[in-house]
Amino acid sequence: MAAWQMGLRALALLAAFAPGAWAQQSPAPAPDGAPGAPAAASPDPAPDPVTGDAPAPTEVVRMGTGSVAGVYFPVGVAICRLANQHRAETGLRCAATQTAGSVANVAGLRDGSLGFAIVQSDALAEAVAGTGAFATAGPDTGIRAVMGLYPEALALVVRSDAGVARVEDLAGKRIVIGAEGAGTRSLADGLIGALGWTAASFGATPDIAPERLGQALCDNQIDGFFYAVGHPARVIQEATTSCDARLVPIDGAAVNALVASNPTYVAATIPGGLYRGNAGPVATFGVTATLVTEASVPDATVRILVHAVVDEIDTLRGLEPVLSGLDPREQVSAGFAAPLHPAAAAIYREKGWE
Image 1 (cartoon, helix red, strand yellow):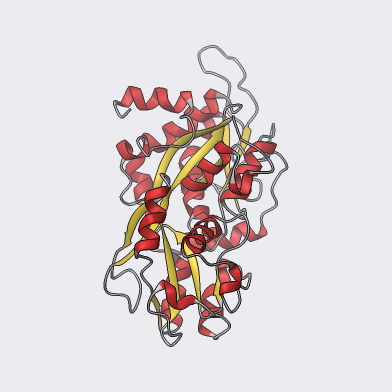
Image 2 (cartoon, helix red, strand yellow):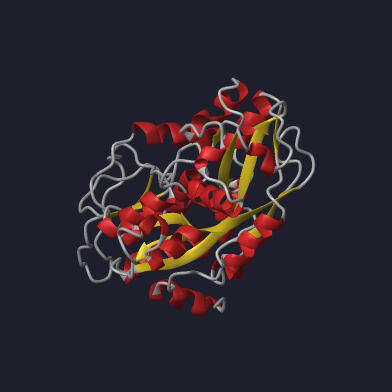
């Protein structure tokens, strides 16, 4: 992991966030898109050199991501970094915000505390339908897709001495299945249901933060953990380099039936060689990480963010390993459960991608 990425994660834990998805006349952001201290050398946009019109005050938009130990946060920082490079012209400041994950991100969009968010495609489908984690809140009729980002394959990581060779061996084991509101939990719950199990089928299901999973596994506090993420992932790298740990295939008839019954799930493979001691590919299933917003977010704001990505897509591919294979045509044809935001759709049509 690059030093600047680790620095961003540390910065996020110290930063104080302004309330609300937007704020006027806010201090300038850190240049990389992470929330940070004011930078006096970065003023609001200058008046138009032709008309002399004064620009609108800097607009701050918060992007909900996930844990600093996961992938959503650095991906959000990378996107915001590109958008913030043009802040002098656009007047938009993008700030990546640490959250509890997909479900929390949808809630933040609904209450207006977030302007954009990264969510799993299955959580997006549930939000649109008002089912699952969103049954109480009801359907989110305003949520809009902006672009697909990358596949998220569900990983099952166990200690090599835990006696787990396949999913069915998890019965009676101490397994972290993810926090309530996180995308990992949504996928794990789907798998558990497909197996005909409940949480009681495990020996224990402790709630451990992602950044502590590797240590807990290697210290024999748990036997394994689920983690839905783009690969390679820092959390899994730490676990497999700190002790003898391996990825277990998530496959079989129950998994095949689960994927076939849910249009937001896809069969997936975690490539071999990404993690120490795991030379071969591992079969599993997963979803797609999707950038979303709400219909109430101004078209101009959406255009700025989308242009920042599509106009500098080669740069974005180099900022995070999970984005290295980003394909713009796949970004806009990911089978979104929510309608595509019209401002984003217009840009994709201009590019000939839609």
